[in-house]
Amino acid sequence: MEQQRESGDTFPVIDTGKCSLCQGCVAVAPDIFFLDENTGRMSVVNHDSYPESMVEEAIRNCPKDCISWEQPIAVTRTTDFTEEEILGIG
Image (cartoon, rainbow, N blue to C red; front, side, top):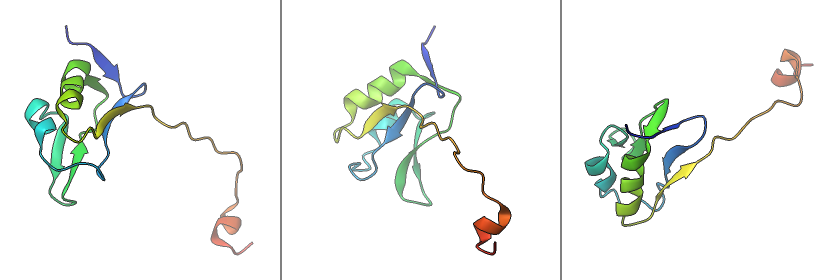
């Protein structure tokens, strides 16, 4: 069975500044990577988990080395603002 990485642990990302739009990642993993026609950039499909071997294959074959695994950033709110403070009327 294919090993899956849960998106809460790590997920694939594309550094679009380095990407040459070769679409090699789409050839390897079309259910994960796609060319977003609205932005003209490569994108990652949002899944709950990702097949590790397919993403690793895309990483190995990327000519610009712009695909990687990243961990989600935990965002914590340290201050509760009132609606007036947010709107600048308080």
